[in-house]
Length: 468
Image 1 (tube, rainbow, N blue to C red):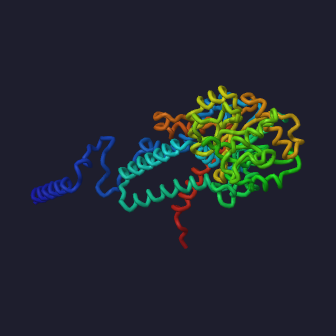
Image 2 (spheres, helix red, strand yellow):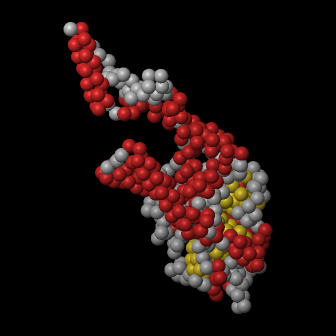
Image 3 (tube, rainbow, N blue to C red):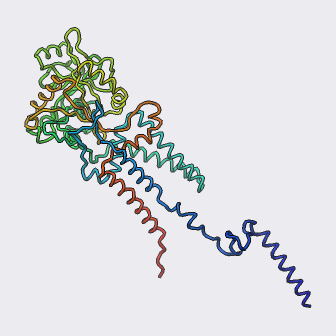
């Protein structure tokens, strides 16, 4: 009896063991002494060890940004430089308002976008698309995806890209301001537009121009609209009595001269009639007559983009040529040419003894100044409008090549194929190396503050609901 019971139990045990081995994967059959022994049948799977997952819990993105900021600080450069020599500018520096610093990462990124050339814009957009595609592919491999989800993600990416550029061009925000330490030096913009120009932003009034230039640290700005003097005259009418009391708006006109776009300073005030009646072209004969008085010829500035083979020079018939040439022009196409052809522009300025000037070429878009022209004029703060414009033009006319110091914002340059192919990392790196100490601190505050905010929201969402 006992033998039959023993045999029965043995058979049942072997049948149970066989069924278990058939139903349970082979990987779970480990020896009891193994460090990876499978849990008993029916027990929940064992959680991964902390040693295997600790690195996944680290906030790698904030850590990477922090390390990059610290590394860039070791290679820090001034955010402004002499546009002709690339040397530091001892008498000037960039100042940042509390509002600018409060949103420093946003301010710095939008400033950089505004100062890119056409080629850099295209290259940077391609970089953004490439990074987006890589991220989506990696996520799809790790967690799966659907066509609908990817289409939605692509749409959000496109909306975000367009919104970023729209904010950079349209939304008012604090500006980086040039601060000059020498009281005898003033900063001037020789190329700006209002709504009265055919290509100006709708609603961009002369007071908008004044406020923009004041925020950027200009002491004076020439309004050089196309085929109209209305914006300049309105701006002059509301100027402060003396230059030291606020940003002064001065009069100029953008017109054609020998097929080139030039700015003629004081074209409708001291030098009336030197253009055609429609204010479209400079009249060579009228310009020659206006130049008969020694050291009083109208100041003509070659603007960019332009044909450097056709820069107006003194003709054999005695018709005056250009007095100055833009070495920095703030339009995307102007930035492209003035950076790619910088050496040639400097050569032309040396050959023809032309003053180097900068022009924002602002038409009402963006909140970033690309450059400033510094001139030394003792006593300029006590001058009214016409006296100030006369003094500025005298400095350009007499000093020529040595009359000015052009200052520009520092941005990653290069229009060659390699520089454009590496535009993403190069532009980012140059932006980070030009940050000041206050800006770096705010970058860190934003980086780690957003991390803590995201973790706080996540903890709030998964918090167990209270039971009654």
